[in-house]
Length: 363
Ligand SMILES: Nc1ncnc2c1ncn2[C@@H]1O[C@H](COP(=O)(O)OP(=O)(O)OP(=O)(O)O)[C@@H](O)[C@H]1O
Image 1: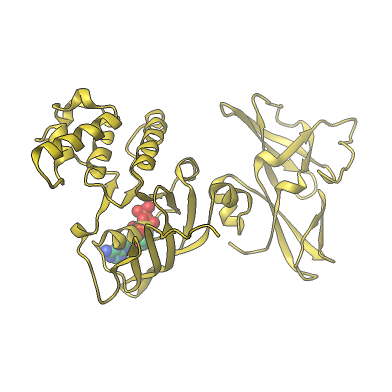
Image 2: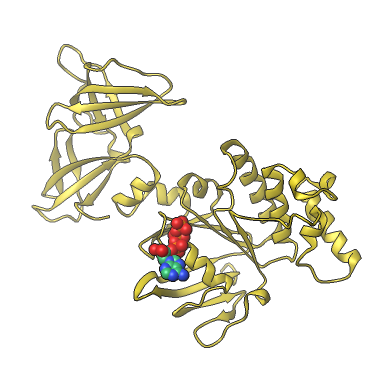
């Protein structure tokens, strides 16, 4: 039997209401040392409130918070924020402008001068900023300031790092670079990281585990691969990409559509279902004198549509079709350049192993 490790951070059944409105409901999760968990969800879903309760700047109405197996907060007992050994990094990371980089990083450190200096140098070497040790923040670029903020947050060796949209102030290219570097440093330090973001790309890139939040609750939790490939409802698919939705009615655990039959296991006869497909899983085929490709088990039956518009997006092309059978619009993406003229008739098929069938109206 593998030894059961104690989670570094464990929150159980956290709840918080404002003026009678529940904004965090029954949120539970645990994060192991060196693990990054992303709280991912739309604006206002309660991510920051969850983080603030863990940091100790906000009190939960109920639920518990443990760090390394020790209780740090429930409704009767509360360790103050400054004694929780929890590091914080927010979008507005504001370094102290009148302090040098070294003084900023040393700010929250205990211990003698030599010990402090050693830790500052260790971290500045790690984030590759030793050359700026005596600079002031306004001499640094946005990315460099962000790295100083990371060094400052990590200096007191926090057991848990809480990060709230920490990269959203950086421009795109810089952001990718800083994210990767930050991740390396965090992993080396072994802190448990809980990162809040509303950007699926950021969560996919950074997380060992994603907790998808909606309306104050965690609706799905798992490795990025699992969340992306086994979403629990339509909204979970839509959170990561554009979607196409085809409706059908179930008969004998199957639903018949213009694209052929789809399995609808567990759905009763007469139930309405939604077949959800990402644009990259629609396949486009040419019209051969009014006919599309032959039906196959993998792709089902082709349905004909007329190109409405086609746009080049950089590494792929997005083509929108108006379907002959019901006038609905479906979107397909194709790698590289594929820009058929509006008005052209083409055929679409759907990969059976890449679509999701949900009861209609869920999510
Ligand atoms: N102190 C407060 N008093 C009243 N309502 C609050 C307070 N703090 C947050 N809320 C409300 O609680 C809800 C959740 O807010 P929270 O900041 O946790 O969401 P979020 O998911 O982090 O969103 P965002 O990404 O926009 O920051 C929001 O509707 C917000 O208006």
